[in-house]
Length: 229
Image (cartoon, rainbow, N blue to C red; front, side, top):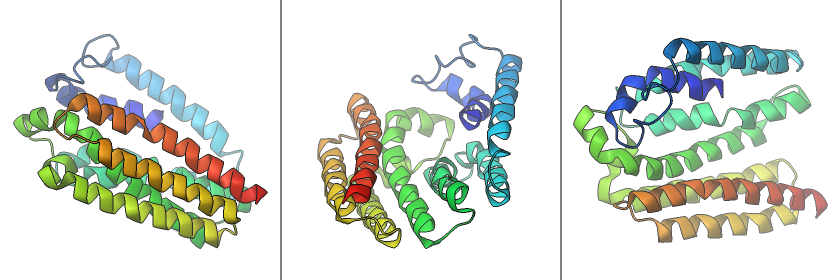
């Protein structure tokens, strides 16, 4: 939440120039920048109180997440791959959740983290296609603009890698066969996304993007099945 608030503060001038985001609280004037900073501070304090309840390794690991959070909003100004930095930022929990329980890291959470980065590369490229025309006018970079008409091919590759890495992470963690069966459902859902995607229809891009909430639920069910079977 703090990361999203910080991102909206940094991007307020860009958001004001993009039709889809001009109505967000800060660029529309519904929330002042000062109020946004106060809200951000409250979220950081709350997060800090949660963090210090964990083990020492996790406290340092959690604090390290502030680095990608701090730099991510600026990446769309200097690189065609801001989605990769979002993947690193957004999926830190794959590492922190593991260390909070076991007091350190291992190969399984690292593989899971990399898989999640590829997943984010896929779904956020889809998301970015909503704004590609406005982004081109104001000079904002994205993988949507970079890939263009080849987006389905690139996203398909990202999704294949994410499923393979999710499966490998489950195997490394000792998940049972139920988890791997669940991965078939994950693969099917991602295949549906590619089939349904129309990069020239913003409403479909948004629908496909939002369906990744369902994918998260499918992965969670797969983990439960892996524990049961």
